[in-house]
Structures are given as C-alpha cells and as structure tokens.
Image (tube, rainbow, N blue to C red; front, side, top):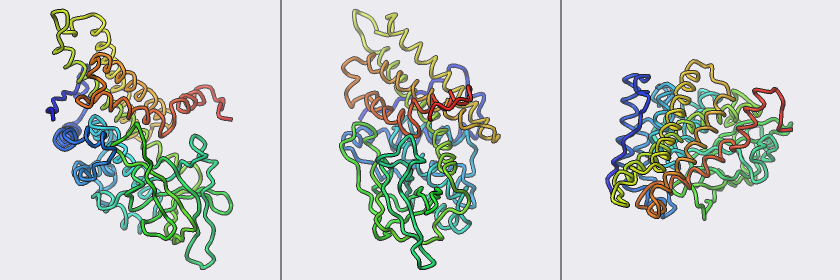
Length: 394
C-alpha cells in the first residue's frame, strides 16, 4: 500500500477565513482518513464492500451529527465544521462520506428537528456514537425526482396504538445494515409524514443492491415494508408535508457541496504529483503546456468551489441560506469534481485506470454523487425557477 501523501491545495489562503477550531477539526478528520481509510479503501472498492470497521472512527471525528447539540450526543459544531468534515471524508471516498451524510443529515437531522423529545433521547446518542446506524427512505422505484408522487403509505391499524406501513424505497445508502430508518410515507389523507422504522419489526426487510460500478465501498439497498406494524409514537410530530424531507435534503446537499471539493482535491493532488514525477521526452510531463493547462484549470475551479462552499457555510450558519443557493453549490461543485477527475485520469494515462491510484474510483463515485440528492438537471431547474419565477417542473 502506497503512503497517503495528500497535501490540500489552498491557492487563495482560505485557511485565513477559518477559525482555529475549524482547522483543528479538519486536520483531525484528515489525519483519520490518512490513517484508517486510505490503506483499506481501494480493496474495499474492489470487493464492493463497505468497511464497517471504520464506523467507530467516523464517530470519533464527529462525522455523525456534528451540529447536533451535545445533550443528544452530537458535537455541537457549526455548519462550516460539518462541511470541512465531509470534505475530508470524501477526499478519502465518496461512499464513506455518503454513510456519514445519511447518518447526519437524513436520519439525525429530522429526528432532532421534527422528532419528539423521547425520539431525540432514544435515538440520537446511539446514532452519534455509531452504535445505531440509520437510513433515509424517500426515493421509490417509480418516484425519484418527483418524491411527492410516492406510493408508500400507512393506515391506522385500528388498535389505537399502531399504524400499518406498506411500500418500498430504492437506492438507500446504509439500508443493508441500518438499525433505524426514517421513512417518508403518506397517511390515508395523502399527507406525507416521517416514520421511524426499527430493525426487527415484522415485515420490514432491507435487501442489498449489487453490481454497482459506483460507490462500491458503500452499502446500498432497498427498504421494503409489507404490512409493518409501527407504533403511532414513531411518527415524527414536528412537521409533515413534502417540505419536511426536502429540508433534510438541504442539509445533505450542503455536505455534498463540501464533500465534492475533497474528491476534486485528491484527484488534483494525485495528478500534480504524478506530472512532476513522470518523465517523457526527457523531462517531467508537468513541463508540457497541455498538462499545465489541465492542472491550472483544476486549481482554479477548486478555488472557486472552495469560496462558494465557504460563503454558503457562513449563510447557513446565520440561517440565511436558501434551498436554491444550496442547489447551486451542490450542482456546481459536483460538476467541477467530475470534470477534474476526468482530466486527472488523462494526466495519469493508463495508470489512471488502476487501483494503484484513487482517480478512477473517485470518477466512478462522482457519477452517483452528480445524480443523488437531486440530479444535475433538477438542480439547474431549481436555479432557473429561483431567478425567473417560472416553474419548469410542471
């Protein structure tokens, strides 16, 4: 195993915009990735297996619910700290960051924001420590970009205490090993509610999705509900309607906007290092104009994305960030990372497709990241709606 020699680019001295606490949190996550993720991630991707052994480490660096208050087991950090942790984890692997994003923004966030105090005390500390792992059920086989069309539903069981849940969710990170799932389903009036489904409830199954070319080191599966009896007390009381799950997606998309920078930085750093060492025609390929063009464009786009994410983090911490602003950052930064991965692969030539380097793995992972949590095109239309006032979805 080659040593992890990653050095983060900071062309505009953006570290000066961070507090000492921000840098300490980031550096702790970076060190953990170098020590515990980099040595095993290539083999995990080759084996198409999520390395569950890293779950305690993710918890130790505050990756599970970093902004959740300490009274519920979280670290009580700010939004920029959350972004920086996601950046460092995705520098290691997008699939590992997906695991942390789902746990934080799609499971812990709705329980914290919309759950009862009993929910918070029962689930959040165990989710923060990694004792419990969670998944988020919104996407369905026939409803992806249009989640409001979901058919997963529940009805009163007639016993005064329970509901009966039926339906299926698809493309669910963490589902094969989740202990709890925050599932979005319609009641008998067609209103969307969040329901906490727990492992072991009869009729609840989580088959794994196989044969993925992307996010191979992340566990993906389904959530299937066949007459699952769920206590009414497991319904999130704080908010209903489609806006509730969409607010969770805002938090996840914010983390992705930062995470994609990490993947891009790793590809850039790998390509730069290789270009300086690879000799052709009597000199390093870094001396050739076309390679310098690629590298110069990479660092320019990374720097722009860093500024976009930092400003978004400030706005989100102040409670001013809009959903449309988050969509813009997610779309821009993931597209940036996809392009950099492809250019970096070219710099490495044939070596770029091997597992000896991280670039091809990042490239394949980013093909999922550009689609999930709102596709590339959907985010474009969100910006279009915001600036024109015209809804292109209908």
